[in-house]
Image (cartoon, rainbow, N blue to C red; front, side, top):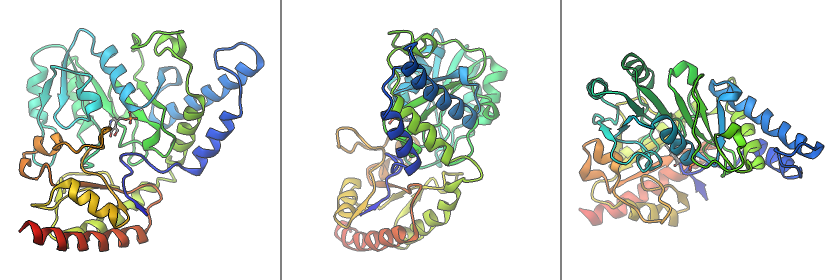
Length: 363
Ligand code: PLP
């Protein structure tokens, strides 16, 4: 089997697995004052320091969550309270669902946010802007630094969903100049079940779930220590000079060349993109048909965003890019951290065979 669906979830890194197993062997609750509790607390705080340092925040400004969805929801709930919300048109549903009624920031045909439109929207009053660093379907990178400067000048706040960018390109909250940043462990090669919200200095957070006052009262509930330890271990593997994802770009390019030769269109190719992601439309062939055909050939990819129900909706990302006609015909190929040339060769052969069969039928 060839796994090319890293943007849904990455294979677990061996270092993360080891950290998870070590944390599972501990019995204490990090909130307990006895020795076992203190040992658990040490694991939690060591992970906090490592993840905060890796992504440009102070340890006290990092709140562990259950994943990217919760980190985004917490940011919007806490930093957006009483403010108008402005949300990028291609944001993940984790953001869109947490910001009902938000003004939509349009994107161009490559999926890049329109900064002139942002400047206009910011003139309408105090706001929280949500702009992702990298799109999960196309890999398109957003001009977050420039958006942060506009927000600062307008007295607005900026929340950045860095779930797909973290560990794949340089991500540093201080350097971006944003107010907050969401991360997810399983997109980095950690286990599912842990994520983090990083804050710029000076932000206080009202919790979504108050509970027992954990995470300095910002997120109630006993932290998922093994998942958090795994998140930290995975994040460490993406730190320079390891930077393993840069090496994926030539493999991604080779996959694209094979698909182009078979009649595919590469979506968002005109914009800076993540090195591991390509979004390929095959005109006239439904995305779910492509996914099933490739799966039968042993290649695992997805149709746009992964849906929990397994159903494939038309992509709101492609629709926002003005590509309505292709919105139901595009698949996402996302290379995991351990992708190899043999995976791309297998993909190329399967894609070309599929395209020859299905494109002919569609014509
Ligand atoms: N944000 C983006 C851009 C994503 O791609 C995803 C998951 O696909 C999420 C948020 C949600 O993250 P999680 O699965 O950790 O809740």
